[in-house]
Image (cartoon, rainbow, N blue to C red; front, side, top):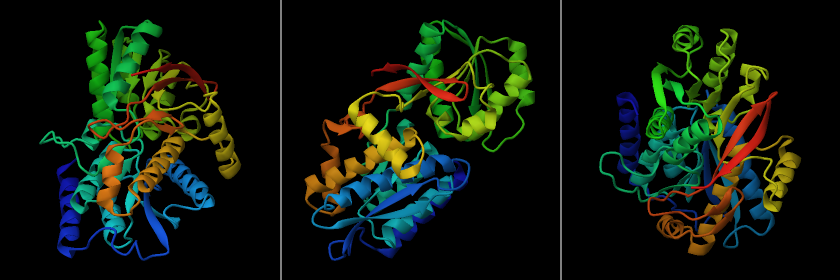
Length: 388
């Protein structure tokens, strides 16, 4: 998190503390139970936010059709962080102090989730991160202490980076890599570091590590440098907006080697930006594949397609799982008091999520399988499942 973002987060927290408002007050007397759904609804990661909000709304709709929870209906309070950490803190502050939600789910970007978790801890409001994979989301970077009110339903980057590295070495049989890293993203930097660690320990070599920034448009200068290094594979742990442009421009420069990345690729816009042909011979690690043949998964896919007219991506299913896990915790707590919800979340065990049976560990993280996705003619093709 940048210094300017950190200052904005601190200001948001101070506003909360000075207001002296107790989170959750008024929910017990209200008609509905309010749950905050905070996502990247606009900005560079907007497709993630839209999918995440859709998954959450579907979970809430289904729960309400079954009678809601604690004798009340659930009200989704949708909030937009504009794909920015500072806006994440601001939106979380509003959810806590003005909207009086009992808990919050959402957010894909790790930088945004880290900013959100700072407000969650200050307000003592339970927060479940949906797709944010950096370890700093649930564990304080400075103290090493597990954050009391922050949880997540996805795997972490140490696992994802290792899965990606092993796939490159063991399946693609390649050992010389160049990495292109978004230096403005905690997610990209963290995933790159874990990939590099596993890759070099496994005998691979990283020829160079080149940097770019979110919202960059022209990558041909750096890609020309990469081409001259003659790598066997390029690792790009970024988000779909920049990744799409990088892949497109790499192919235009005649770079034909495999390009590999992480779950930040999982958006329909990736194909729109890069082009179907350019994405051939690319792969990424992900939380889920719509080709999963389990009855629960296929039932979810069909219900989502009926509701929204499209195949769900990983953000949709993770948000669906996270919202249902939160609803389950409120039921088990038999209360909308944030502290009791927090206590119920900490003992979550063997929850039957679509993305796999979920138990939250000592650091409030879900231990999950990962899948390898191959892009072929513009479509995602399931390649393999990897267990922790």
